[in-house]
Structure formats: structure tokens, C-alpha cells
Length: 315
Ligand SMILES: [Zn+2]
Image 1 (spheres, rainbow, N blue to C red):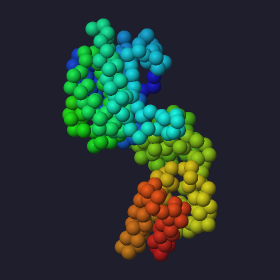
Image 2: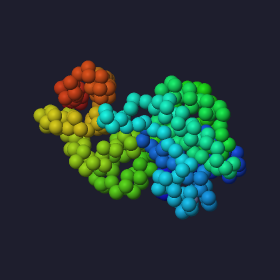
Image 3: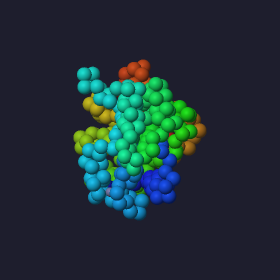
């Protein structure tokens, strides 16, 4: 298994505790979405189950490692948001039935030396009942059990759960780490600067760029808004008409905001800066407004871009 970049401190702390025989039974990894927390948790599970770990890493070759990587380890279980095949979408939350089933798995008493790992991904999506059920499991841990909780928003978890876990903060990747990971994934070199900027340390945020056509479209978009003061509104509208449905709105807005930020440095008067700032705020809010259906996406963004252009043009 490849090393996960950027969260070495979590692996180090875990490995040390494991080696010293004082491993806490529940670990809570938190940080923004898409930065590799679940991958780190998977590595911790491997390290915990591995027969011959060395230097704080699972060996990747023993029977335990092999079963885990093949997804068939009988002592590893994972809870995450379920996909509803009838409704063809993911459930809204992680429910109590899932949580109870998972805790039963964790509590199954096998041999005394038996280890069991339960991973809960997207724990911030547990509903109240599910969280209460989990709390019980945290209060009465079974010997040899390890609970790995992955959470994108710590405030969504009850304090009673947080206080019973070993908290581990995971930070967004820094630009160099982002580039390293993207390069390792075989990312198009032309896209690297844009992807690194847009990602803001989260690979999950730019998942859509893995798709070649979407990535190319965003590069075109970057070119269209690069010089906002002289931008071609007709072409901008055309681009939006064809892509607003299939490219995440926060990425569309981010490209505009990055361009505006770069040009804002050149502004000299207070009035211009203020007008630009107001327009930038509108662009930043645009994805949410569209989601709430309070406005039509293309005309709204066009009007904000015109405001930006106006502010920059009068330089
Ligand atoms: Zn191993």
C-alpha cells in the first residue's frame, strides 16, 4: 500500500502508541473533505492487524495485510453512507441499524487475542440515534477492538463522542504535497498549476478534473476569465451555457475568484477595491444561491462577472 502524503504525524502517533502497548480504543480523524483521512485510517487498520509491522508501517505482505487489501479481512468492517439502489442516490445519513450492526461486529468475542477493527467514514453524517448508539460502544469497548472514526466536520459530532476518542487533526495538503500526489496520479502537467490552486489542499475537491473533458473545459474557463477587464462576455456566456450543468459550481466560482484576486493587486483606488470586493463576495456566494434555487445560475453569474469587469475596467 502506498504511503499517504501529508498525515505522517497521525501514523507516527498511532504506531508509537501501538508499539508501547497503550493504544487508545477509538481514534477520531478529522479535517476537511478529500484530504486522505480515510486512506490514513485504512493504513492504521493495516498496521493494527499486520503480523510483522516494521518502522511504523504494515508489511503489506503477511496474511493479515493480504486479506485487508483484498477487502476480505473477516475482522475489518466499514460503515459509510449507503447507496439506495431504488432511489438511485445515497442515503441522507448513517442510521442506527448500520451503527448497531457494526458495533455488534466489534463486540463479537472470538479468541482473546483476536483483534477487530471498525471504521466509520463520514461520521459527521450519523443521525442522532446512530450517534447515541455509537456512544454506548465507546463507553464499553471490547478488548482487542479498535474504532477508527473519520469525520469532515467535528462540530456535527456530539461532544460526548469527541471526548471519548483520541482526536487527530488532519490538515489540507500543502501545494508541494498536492503536486506530488497529482503527479503520481499521472495528472496532465498543463493542469497541475490550476489543479493545485483549485484544490486548496483537498484532492476530493478537484476529483472532477480526473475527467479529461471537464479538466479541459476548466482550463478554457480559466483562459476566459484570466483578464476580466477585457473578457469576452459572449464567450463567457457560451461557456456557462454548455458547462454549468456538469462542472461543480464551486470550481467555476473559484476560477473566477482566483483571477479576480490576482488582478485586485493592481487596483489603486479605494472605491474600485470596494466594488471589486462586493462583486467577489457575490461570486463566492453564487454556488450556494444556485443550490438553494434562489436564482438562475447563468444570468446570475454573468451579472456578477460584469460587476467584476466594471470594477477592474476603470483602472
Ligand atoms: Zn502485514
